[in-house]
Every structure is written in structure tokens, then in C-alpha cells.
Image (cartoon, rainbow, N blue to C red; front, side, top):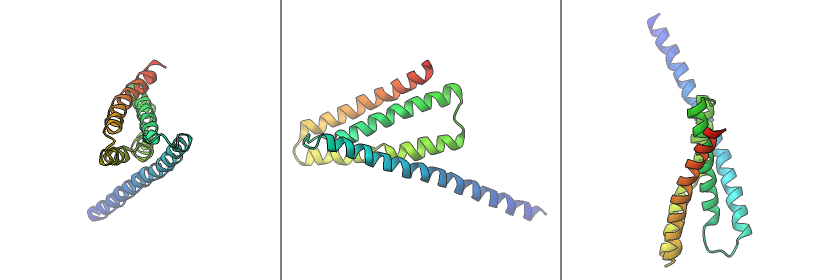
Length: 142
């Protein structure tokens, strides 16, 4: 009887982990698609800008949304654990693009576009951190 209980617990534990993986993976897929579409649209509207505006827009929006939803989750406890997994780790993890930010910044340095590279760093850090703060403040104010 004791061994049967352990086996049942392991099965439920594996199912729970697989469920979480599917939730995060689904959100990541949708977030990555949304990032691709939005940044592509931004680049299409500014094709000769020579600056990674698409990545900047995605990161600012992602930071704003995570600040807002994080504030709602903390202040009002409105998001359950599965929704948090889907949105925060899955969707927004796939949507925001700080790895792309690093790559594009290094490419600007490589191409001797130092002013643009430093501007990219400053804009991303200041605007994105501000967006997290603003999103959090908005969620607490409503």
C-alpha cells in the first residue's frame, strides 16, 4: 500500500510539472509571435532609422505590462498561479527581447555606431524600468 501511494504521488507530480511546462511553453509561443509581429511592424514603419526601435518598443511595452500585471497580482491577488506562469514566464518571457537587445547593441558597437549603442542601452534601461514602475503604479491606482 505504501509503495502504491508513492507511485501515485510521483504520477501526479509529473503531470503537474508537465502541465506547467505546457502552460509556459504556450505563453512563450504566443509571446514570441507577438514580438515578431510588433517589432516587424515597427521596423516596417521606420525602415531607414538605423536604430533598433522595434526591440525598444517591445521591451518598453513588455515592461509596462509586467509592471501592471505584477502590481495587480500583488495588490489584489487577482491572478492565479497558472495565469502567472502563462503571462509572466511564458508570454512576457517570449515577448520581451533583452537577448536581442544585447545582440543589437553589440552589433552597433561592432559597426562603430557607439553613440547609437550607448543610446540603445540608456533608452532601454531608463524607459523600461520606468515602464515597470508606471505599470505597477497604474495597477495600484485603479
